[in-house]
Length: 493
Image 1 (cartoon, one colour):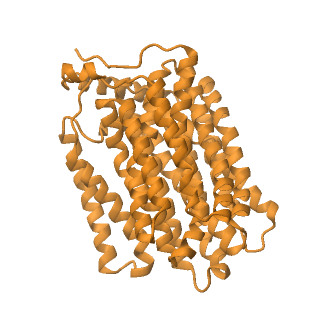
Image 2 (image 1 turned 180 degrees about the vertical axis):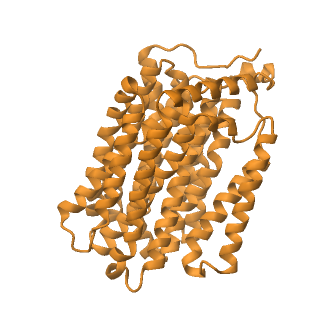
C-alpha cells in the first residue's frame, strides 16, 4: 500500500512560518510581473525594439514557465518539494542576475527564458507545500487568502520600485531586487521547511513535455509575428498548423500513458476545469492590461516610469486588500461569490477602458485601474482553492501546477493577443494612434470578464462539489496501481 510522505504535524506558529517562506517566492515572481512591464518602454528605447520585441521580452518568460510548470509540480511531488523549491529559487536568482547584464535584446530574451526555468519550480511547488501544511479546509482557505494578498502586495510595490529603479539606475536595476530576496528564501527554506513528497512514483513524460512546448511556442510565435509577416503568410499558417497538430497529438497521447504529464481525468471535476479555464481567461485579461496600460502611460501620456508606476499603485493596493477578503469568504461560503465579484470587476474595468483617450482625466484612468483591480483581486484565491480542493493530497503539486500553467498561458496569450491587436491596428506614431488601435483589446478584456462570470455560475455549487469528489475517488483508485518509490528514495525524503 502506498503512503504519502507528507509534512510532519507542525505547530500553528511553524505552519505560518512555512507560509511566509513560501510567500517569498510568490513575492519575487509577482514583483517581476509589474517591474518588467514598467521597464518595457525603457528596454525598447535602449535596444530600439519594435512592438514584437517588447512582446517577446515578456512572453519568452511566460512560454517557458507555462511549458514547465506541470513538470515541475509532478517532479516536486516525486523527488521532494523542498528540494525542487530550493533549486527553483537558485535558478531564478541566477537568471535575474544574467538579465541585468544582458548586452542585447536577444540575450535578454534568452536570459528571461533561463529565469523562467527557475520560476516554474516556485509557485506550484510552494502551493503544494502550503496545501500539505494546512490540511484543515478553513485554515487552508485563509492561508490561500494570505498567499493572494502577498501577490497583490508584490504588484503594488512592483510599479513603484520598478519606476524608481528605471528612473535612477536604468531598466537593468529591476532585476537586481530579485537577488537578495532569492538568496534569503533559499536559506530560510533550508532552515525551516520540512521535506515532503507524494507516496506515488510518477515517471516523467518527455514526449508530452515536448508537445506542450511545441504547442505554446508555435502558437505564441504566430500570434506575435502575425501582424509583421501577414496572417495568411506561409510562415504564420505553418506555425498554427504545427501547434494544432502538436495539441491534437498531446490529447491523443496523454490518456494512453499510465503516468501522464497532464492527467486528463482532473478535468472531470467541474470546479477544477472551471479553475483552469478561469485562470487562462482572467490572466489573459491581466497580462494584456499591464502590457497596454504601461505603454499608454509612458508613450502616450508621456509620464516618467516612476509616475507610471504610481498610477498602477491604487489598482495593486485594491488587489492586495481584496485577496484576504476572498479567502475569508471562501472559508465561509465557498468560491462562487468571489468568482462572481471577479468576473463583474474585470468586465466593468474593461468596459471603462474602451473610453480611454490620450487626454482622459487622471481620475478616470485611476478609476479604470481600481475597478479592474477589484476583479483581479478576487480571482486568484478561488482559482487555487478550486484547483486543489477535493483532489488527493498526493496530487497537490500536479493540481497546483496545472492551475499555475493556466495562469501563465493566459498571461502569455494576453500579451501576445493585445500586442498583435495594437500592431495590426496602429497606423502612424504610437502616441497618435494608440487609443483607437487598442479599443478592440479593451473589448476583449471585457469579454474575458463575462466568461469568468459565466464559469463561476456553471462550475461551482452542489453539482460541482459532487463532480470533484467523484474525480478524487477515481484518481485515488488509479494511483493505487502506480508503484511506490524505492525504499532508499523514501528515506531520503
